[in-house]
Image (cartoon, rainbow, N blue to C red):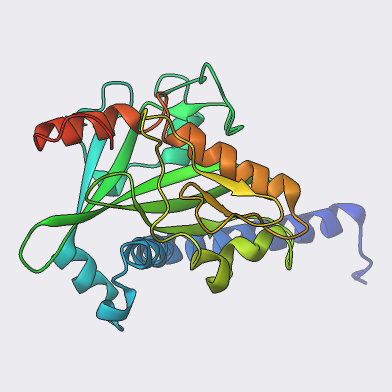
Length: 260
């Protein structure tokens, strides 16, 4: 007479089979969904860049076509400020910053990023006449809880701010997360990054910036650490270890000399 009594070995075997089947299903799903995830990530990035360039309303539902029509993504070497060869679509700042062969520790890490990728992607945005009227520059720096990623759009003088748009952060809703608030973002257009000596002076002002403060923007209410993080992020990325060498090279190539 056969026995149907379960044994520990049978139970363990059954559990292992179930685990293997589940793992296989998860792996298959991950592989199949990867292209969609990559496409969605790229679409979100292009949407934020168009917003930074003031072209989101122009794009409507056709983000990709608008991006391809107006935006030219180029790789740069941050130390020299020179354009370099490379595929912007394959560039991953977060991955590079974790790779000691592709990044370095800043001498003055006021942005709190630990390591800075040697290269970056900049976005030259052209008007209908083909002239570059906006340059979008990615930024990253510490907030209260983690790194905050975003973009700064500069007008053709490479000093006047068109917009500041954060795309990824973990700040507290209602406090640091107010970097996403349209009212706060509306304070940025027309502000100046550099003073007349070419030093980055853009900053957030606790209690509110004065009307004639061309470098100051209202700090985020109740979010001092996030506000300080934004200031330090901007001053780092527009300093010598950020985009300042690129800005100088680019302006020189246009015959405009230094930063104004």
